[in-house]
Amino acid sequence: MENQSIGRVIIFIGLIILIVGVIYYFFGNKSSWLGNLPGDLKLEKENFKFYFPITTMILLSLVFTIVLRLLRKFL
Image (cartoon, rainbow, N blue to C red; front, side):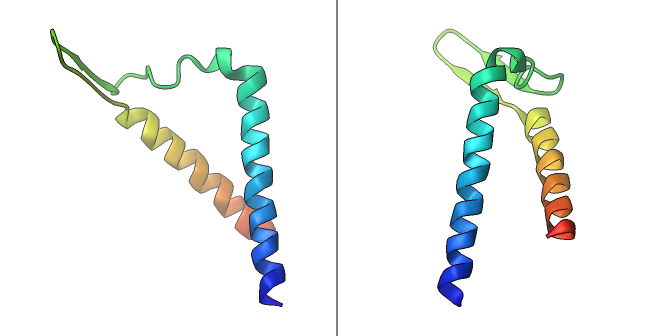
């Protein structure tokens, strides 16, 4: 029984990766704002670049949390 549940989890993760890949393939050029939000840190000097997308990470964390809670509620 445990092997079946592990198999279901692997299939579910694969489907999520497939859906994200299809969305990115068709709508990737429309997501150029992602990573350029106010609050994302960008430091550039002569030979040094530092990029820390803190606002983008917070936004993605909120979206993933909401999606996972909805999945847990309905599954």
